[in-house]
View (spheres, rainbow, N blue to C red):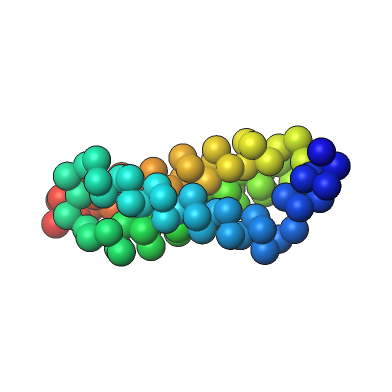
Length: 96
């Protein structure tokens, strides 16, 4: 378990997971919603939202010096951030 914790603290691994979450969230959002964006655009918007959500949770918990214990919360923040940004882009596209 200690090796798994060390792997998840590597920045490249975290970045790869956040990008993967953004792509999967964007593809699922496009598939199950009536979004006017294509799959590629939804994936890019999902990556941006995922990174934004992860960063907001990371920096809000940064002062507590919690590295490992907050990882699931950060990844949930990445998922929620991707959905919120995709939803906001869909609303902006619908109002235009």
